[in-house]
Amino acid sequence: MSARTLQTGSRILVVGGGTWGLSTAWHLAQRGYTNIICIDRFHYPSPDSAGYDLNKMARTEYAGEKFMQTISREALGEWRSNPLFHTVFHETGRLSIASSPVNYDELKEYHRELLESPRASEIVWLDNADEIHKFAPYLTGSFQEGKAVYNPEGGWVHARKAMEAVGAECTRLGVQFIAGPSGTAVELVFDSSKSNVLGVRCADGSTYLADRIILATGAWSDLLLDMENQLIAKCWTLAHIKLTDHLEREAVKGIPVILDLEKGFFFEPDEEGYVKICNEFPGFTNYRKVVVDGKEKKLSVPRGHGSHPTDSMPDRSFTEVRELLDILKPEWRNRELLNAKMCWCTDTPDRNFLISLHPWYGRSLVLATGDSGHGFKMLPTVGRYVADLVEGKEDEWQKLEHGKELKDKWRWRPDTADKRPGDDSRPGRGGDLSEEEGWEGDAAGTIGGREDSHAIGSSSRTRRNQQVRASLLLTALAITLSWVAYRGLLWDV
Image (cartoon, rainbow, N blue to C red; front, side):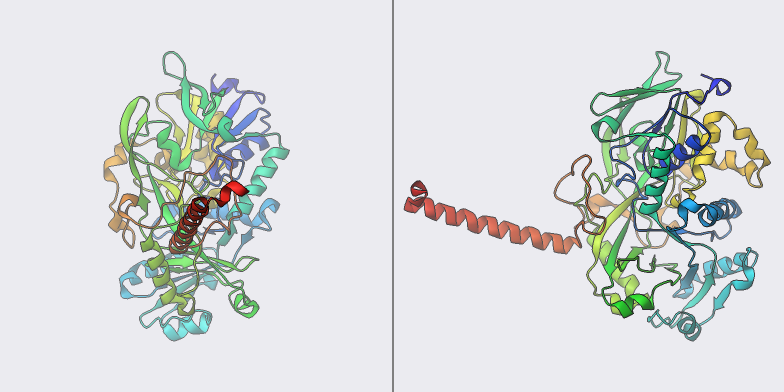
């Protein structure tokens, strides 16, 4: 079916109920399409999704990247103005800190560009520890070599609640959601010539045929289609602390997002007192041998937190989170770290998105992936671009300020696969999970299972202690039962 013959009742299948899948379904439904199905292993918002989280930044700071600044400000406008997001978007601004000279140049570049931003008159440069402490008295680190810049633009979004809001709006507009084995995509269905994608087959054998298939599968994209080395699934790590003291919570309520350019960042507490903390590093891979399109490949395979709810994060990440707190807020360093987990994204070589038609399958298959760790803030707007591709309207992008760059930066581009920067392009040290300890949980989890986002475990050490205690109890019980059986007392029950 060509773009010209797409009707409002045409069958549209969105594969993936995460951030970009929900955004796509939402924008298509707003355009009047009435036969949209969105499938995922889980009901929306998918807990495997990177967006299933307490906080995500909504930022516009991109040193030297005018294109990303432009599309980020476009999304920021929607976060501010769309009533759907009024309760989940918090424009607190961001305080970026160079705690050592190694990041001075990057910070100065931020500052230079922010002085040309829409709120340039509100930008604040902080040149030393005294100025940082005066501006942000809630930060108690020494900052002996510290400098910082405050940008009032942007802030953070309660990510999970934002996705819930978009999912509910999709449902209101008639989008059908299918989850569980019937929504777990395992392979694409092609026509006899393999020149068009006809649909998707799922784990229980269910097959969904459609006139347009949108692959919004994030870190799982490479497992459904050969992406020709354009994507690598990577995870970043995070943990939380809980502030139970009312005065302590109030002291950091409404603060900007706090970012140390080398070590990581944290947010203000949510309404329950949870503070999310992330260490900065290049991400972990998880390489395994898999079969895709009938060919064996070695790929980084994600372990989403919904599918693996007992996974934590590597021991090294616990150490790095505490090192971050030691720099910014030393009194928090030894607090219990709760709900430690890994957040799976998919990196492109140049960290631009992959939002494109596939060169082999015409308009039957639309790709919406390659978030590269900074795709959530695009929730309000990314589906608009994907919907344009579904409808064949991408030529209209030329009318936009950034339209000339969209096609080029987001195109299918295996030619860039060998230009991927090394881990040293980001602070910290990455690696593969096979080299790390303390992260792997007890089991693969169950399809459709869900727990409260703050109740899934604490640190890996706490979990191991619980496992040791359970093992000792089972051993003691076995000894007791053996003794009882020996005395013959069981037969008297």
